[in-house]
Length: 473
Image (cartoon, rainbow, N blue to C red; front, side, top):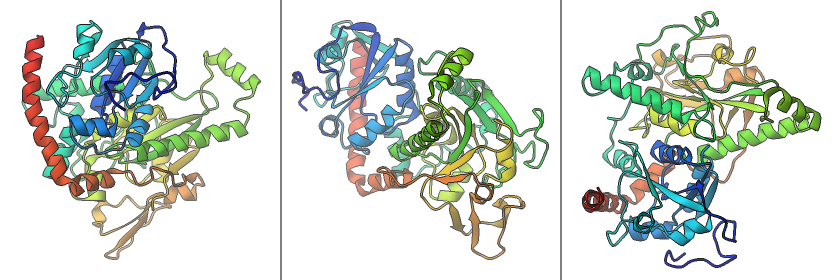
């Protein structure tokens, strides 16, 4: 769609087709959103806090190619990712690369929000020059150290410098680069971001809960924070979990659901899986009378809202675990980055950092919700049986429902305990089934020259954008 043209009625890429009244409470933000990393989500969170609705414009593949270089993710995949963000109210695909006043006015937005960096078009001009001239531009803080360009660089350079060995130590300021003071400040910033990303749809109130598993993790030999054992008592003081954020916990009648994974380069494949888990539980809720008027009335009277039937908890594996499982320089995103990506997704209600790779029966009993094990453990249609040459030292402790082979090739059914407990459920294949970290990396490597040129162009454009930024100050 030509960004210089104003669509006519019936031609707008998203409803409404009629102009709506402009409101300062309706905020516009736009971008490529090529990877759904926490930098994008952080910008949307800050923008959402400035109003009551957030309209997200997404540029087309063609416009991005003309102004920036090739995209990694297709428009359809990028729409899927942005739509799942808890703070996005509506999506407008094919939004012009140079933000247009008629476009934002049509969708009733007074203000446009962008980070404190400059974005330029193919001619080197500021993409927000028109809304700035009209006094309808607001600036939010850009998230440092993360961008699509940074992530592509990690893939091309085969870097592992972003890895976190012990998430608990990082949050205490005991691991990482810099002085002790710098590490403490970084830890404080990370905790602040986690709390912000756990907020509700408004970005201002309590939302998701956040935990960190500090029990044994046989897949991470570098983590010194084994402060409890999975076979210990599950009392409040001894359970091997640390609560990082107190949000809104499960309510009466909600089923506790557990999912886990690496969630690396959090993308439409992960999101569609979580969406299907949510929909499966919605269907079960319907079957058990969740939407009956008497049930809805009871929930509203007791809790002030008609909440949903499932409370979905997502466990996120640490970097060492993912690397031993995937090899190479995976994960491309570290555990903090991956955790924030999952945390901003509207389909989950809680996350657990550093969740063990194999959810044993004892671990599932210790998951800090409900009376006993979760109602269901979901996984996608990929094979959950691990066939690899794993050193015996990183296998989980033996229990009544896990086993260890002494052969060179070790075979471990990751979800054996969940299956034996009768709570395992597989989500069927879907349109984004193959969209995962490995496929994304393959896309980059297959078009390496094009993305290296994009990296070079980005560096050259940054110099021009710095000049523009200084002129605006």
